[in-house]
Each structure stands twice: as C-alpha cells, then as structure tokens.
Image 1: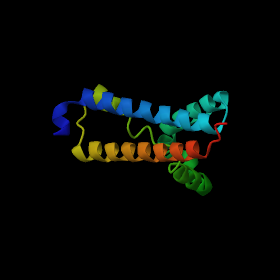
Image 2: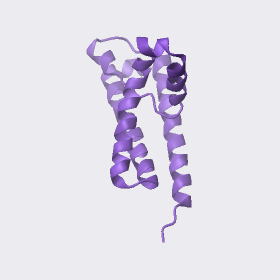
Image 3: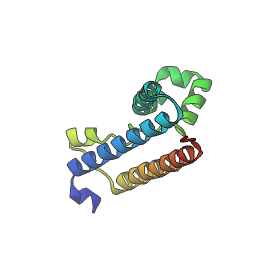
Image 4: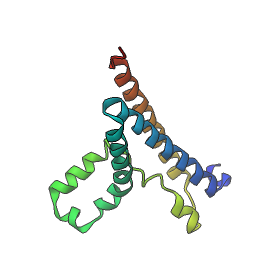
Length: 129
C-alpha cells in the first residue's frame, strides 16, 4: 500500500521527519549549551548527516582503517539523513520498495523516540532556579 500513495507523498513525509529530527537536535543542543553553539552544532550534525554515508564510499576513507571505523561508529550518534532523502526517487521516477519505506520509517521513528528520551532526561536534570 505505501507505493500506491505516491512518491511525492513519501518525499514530503520524510522531509517533514527530517525537519523534526533537526528540530529535536536543536532543542537538545540548546539544553546543554548556549544558543549560538546550539545552532552551530545542529548545522554540523545536519551537514554531516547528509554526507557521512557518501564519505564511507570515498577512496580516502576506504584506504584508512581508522577513518572507516570512526565513520561507521559515528553513524550511531549522527542521524543518517541521506538515507531518508528521497528526492532522487521523485526526480528520476524510480520505484520505492515497501521494505525500503518501512525500514526508513522505523529508523526515523526510533531515532525520534531516542532523541525525545534524551531530551527529557536532560531537561529533568536541568536546574530551573
């Protein structure tokens, strides 16, 4: 059923989920630092979230084992935003497999839930006096 909805719906849906992730990252960073640093950290995570997957296939990264290990483990902390970037599917009129959509929805929702839990833990320990 997801494919029958249409590619443009899924592109808009995943763009909205990406915006939610970026917003939650901004909230999390603003709780642990000042507003200027929070915006810088959020932008760094946004850019690295879109580029880290393509960096893994880069020739330089493949030649260095340390770089590959650091990049692979950084995917646990930095969201893989390129994974949910479905604009290429819309532009090139490629088909979206149901398993691809379901796995990406699960990935994004899990990441959002983890971010909400981390934010609530940080907020509960924050002194508001």
